Length: 339
Image 1: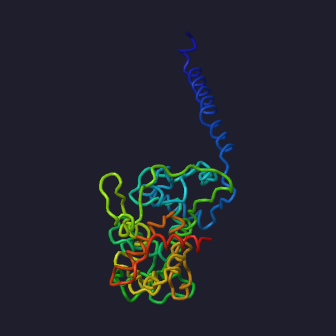
Image 2 (image 1 turned 135 degrees about the horizontal axis):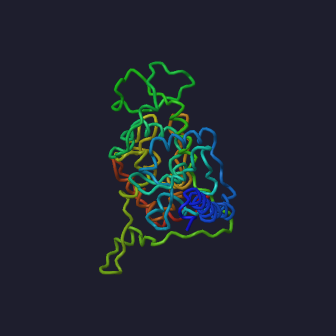
Image 3 (image 1 turned 180 degrees about the vertical axis):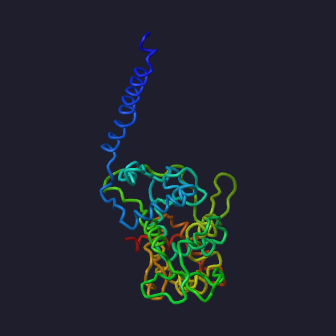
């Protein structure tokens, strides 16, 4: 019983037991996880700017509202091309000797998931104006603005990155909004968030609970009860996949994102170019100041039904009065332009 009356012996025994348990319960499993879960072969390490941007992402508490994990359910399909796997997080290391790693997987989606936002929204212009004031591109957004990441200049230099902020969001219309190095680093981090393609021949989990969405053409044929099919909702699909840039009114943002109202591409009776842009992206108007459009249809795995619904919504909205398209012709064009 003398052992239990000696506080030094008790402390040493307790500390030794704690260290032994820590080694077997925490350290050994962690080392084993690092051995078993290597990064995917095509994974790209963060650049120096993206590393600084990640620190800003953490410092500003972005993880409180945004996740970086695509769950294995169909409702997450809009955020990534596949469900997340452990290899997606295998290359995350300690930030420094004092700070542990931050996977930033998150637990809440007050805002959209960001694990593949670098593909969904690659435009630096969009990301900068969104950080300056999210309401400029998403009118109903509840995300806070980050104006301290920008400075106002009456005469920007050639090296300055000027942000195309609409006039109604400027307090001093005589000055231009210029992105600071912190803003550019944060955008570099956001642009680096891209799901790595799985190696050829490697299987990964399919999305569960797939939607049973049929074409609008079939839905119009009628029918009651369980056999009746549901048409894809063009308005909802546009809001999910297109509205952030082209806006609810279809007019885009001057100097940043082109208008769809009166667009030659949208109104063209031959929809091939339209389908090609949706499936493969578009960057032919960079000389006009417009940011690149990502390959929305491919990245979001949109079906021919869904793309048809989006195109017909755009062709018949905001004063547009173009000939609508059918699922059958869009499916043929998707197969033709697929890269």
